[in-house]
Length: 256
Image 1 (tube, rainbow, N blue to C red):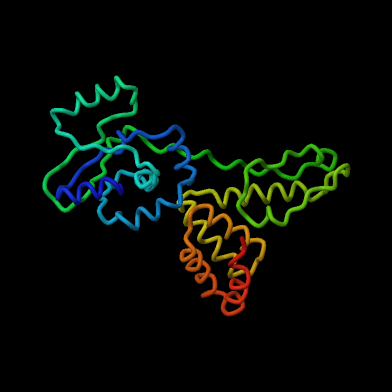
Image 2: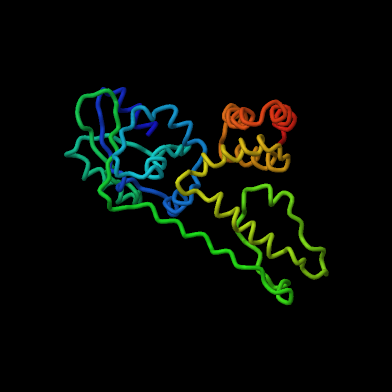
């Protein structure tokens, strides 16, 4: 969207692209469905989202993919329609198999990008969260499977493992069930992962949970949050919890 917005505005035209025709790396749709999107997408939106007019048939994840900030950007070419087929053939013959036509120039305009869809390609439906199993009898606790999904919550920061060589604790299945529950709550659904991360920061500050805040500061930065965005989320929590939360946040906000 960034490159195309600049081309369209500089040329004084409006353009249309077909989302279903955009070449994507393998796995991108599955990652988007799971709410795993680069933080730099938000930077690109700030830059040019006002020039993007997306069809109401497109899910938010579909639109977000269009803002993915690839370092090299991919090569975007505008060419006369009568020459497009010859260009594609030449590119394909030279091994550029992903080269394709993604849209067209509509007419003179102000640089708007209209994103349409044929409905041919959809975002996969995320797998439902696994049901939480009830605690197992004491005799089988040692064999109780531990969850494999990484849960972005302070439960990971404070949970302790049984001492090597010692039998499992009676609360182990309770811990496992609780972490599965947290995994389901933290999984993106109606709210995307970026929004939930901001909420986690605000709640960590409001509840003054030190391990929570340290973990979510690290997670937010890894997702591409700016320090200004982190501060904004934190001050949402402070606005609900008051001065003690402000002192708590100021104490730990520079944790790396």
